[in-house]
Image (cartoon, rainbow, N blue to C red; front, side, top):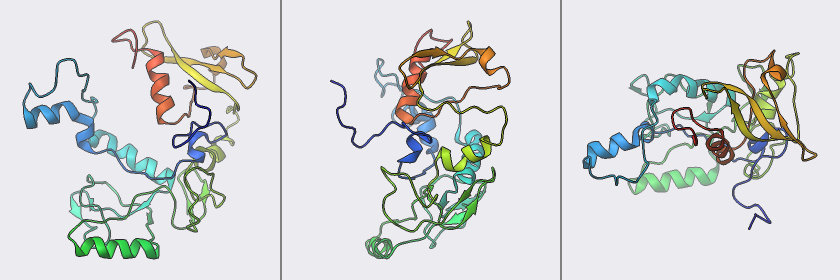
Length: 258
């Protein structure tokens, strides 16, 4: 049965996609998660993972991705407190996360704490826990990102998850990227469109466009001629729909799937 009423996980339907109503929680991936198979085999032995379990490494390391995490946080206006920067501990006693991976730069905005968060931190420290300031793409102060998009300071209204931010404090495509894209004469925004899959070349090595359904229910294939002035067609679903599209689009190494 299809969903009659959406609940916790909301696919994006408006301009801004799922970014309109995500909460803004913005953790980086843990280095272990990128090499999960190798991690468990090193810890528990080669026979620990069943043969029919498809768990595997991502094929890319945290160090390779770190510059892109740093750039994304600057675009998002992510607020937080670093634990270590280039191997030097800077967040001890300041609300840094002792379990977070190393960073190349600090957050652009310092995370603010509500009164309830301060009380929680005090109680957690007293019993020996490691409370930390949650990294979130809800900017704590007025901020202009590298694309020139402006954000306002969060006022702790509490309506982050499930709602668009009227303060322009929460990172979303319509706030942080679209203002810059609108200045590009070659950019075209197609609203009420839902991508079904990414179209690939015959050898499945490059994307040539997308197959999508418009607001009237008609299916379209955006061929390379449609994007002759643009190097890459863009899509902006949430994590679940992005993975679904990737699985549907195929893989040159396997012929199908991601």
